[in-house]
Image: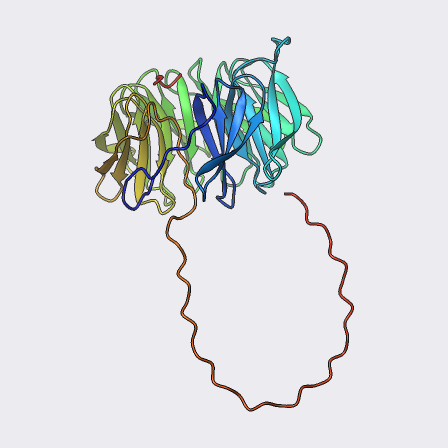
Length: 373
């Protein structure tokens, strides 16, 4: 989609029978990796040519994907167990330069969800939904450490300093707070029913939690580790986005066909914005002026203008059941400067140059289904 015109530019065919559910873009924005949940593969797209350039075979039911902070690897969690081993599910590590699987790490259970890296990329934290734990993988040794949480661990959020990790316990009514230095749960905070997503404000002072079971958002004071506000939203409140300035939180209400805009200063809903049928993924534009909404039972994406808190456009014909979003490279070509005439200089004597030995070059390191609860 061209975000300047709100038009679909092209559609890129994937594998036959593909069920694309997640997209991850490399740091240079030149490659996109698509989880094809029904075909046990990852499709690789060239975001400039807008074509599929490779297919990577992986395990059954690939789900959420995340690029490492240095951009060199793609990590893939799976929503099904290893074939022949129902007690474990795979986490596959893919080289983003070669499109090859480097290794496969096994974690307990099946149905892992969110994956987050520490800022230095040394550890990967995984919300292990069916096992009721957070699994920590050392990205150097691939050793796994499991941290028991509440039941149905679903979404994760680091504090800005990375010293704590918040995990929603979707099968209960709690949020687990983990000290990342010790990998121990230091608090279990009671929130609403079936907490789904969690986000931390940029100043680190508050955590916002969507409670899909009781149509509320809980606000946690990250110093006292207590709930300081409960905000009514809409039916099936799941995903949230926090603006870069920390003044607003947007919440997708899947069964209300709305997005709630919350003022973080007053902890109140300042706008309830109608969108398409069954909104799912929401994503802020890089400049934080727009919010894009996938309408999961529709063929549209709604565009919300953040200053006015209204829908400014509806992008049609995006395909059946839009599920996930990511921003690629700019479509605006870089202008080639017009060369200017250079005045001829009076020639001067050319000094005799001293020969230099060139260093030996060193090799460079490689660096429309309803949303599921």
